[in-house]
Image 1 (cartoon, rainbow, N blue to C red):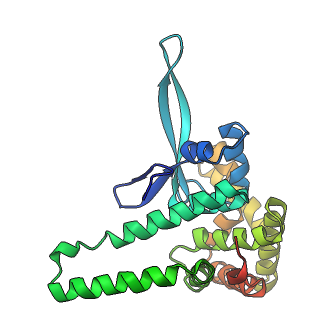
Image 2: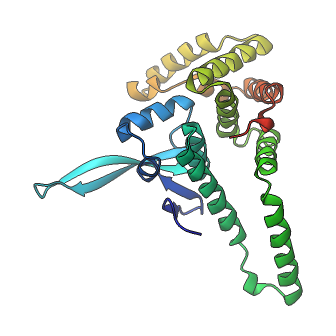
Length: 253
């Protein structure tokens, strides 16, 4: 497979993509930092979906300057590619799907298999390749699996991914804010709670406990939900219901 966009892996074996490499491939006219800031409005979270990385490069005067790149998870890179809604974005997303598929296939060292298992492995690969030719079916399966897998283990990342997909079907960033707001409002209604007041109180408590103002300012309603098991379960139920209502699995790229 030709390498359209460089990828790397971290110590845990997770595939990572440079934000700047993706920005360059997508041929974005906006400066990288401005573009990345705009992408953050889709609900991506630092240390969950990406990690900021300080890089250095030489200047024309022979000195060094520091700039920021972002190591994105493969899921984030796929979603950002989808958000672009153009041919380059579609090409990048399909490339990342192929990278992930190839990575998973290579997790098994076939040389260690018996001849019988090697035969079955080849049969499985052939059948799987034929199935994956149907991209629409594959897209639906991915979305349904994401909804079903929403649980307390990785709830923040998965729930925000589902909300972004609902928003994309409804028109982009403006829709994302609306869908996210509706999910919070429905959580309030079902729980008999007030996330806005709880958020204010959480920020005050964090300031009182010595957290820096910059970190406190990043505190959001998801942090409130994260600290309450009942709220978390209700919020996940709301997101699942929204996904079913909007038939996320039918939304094509």
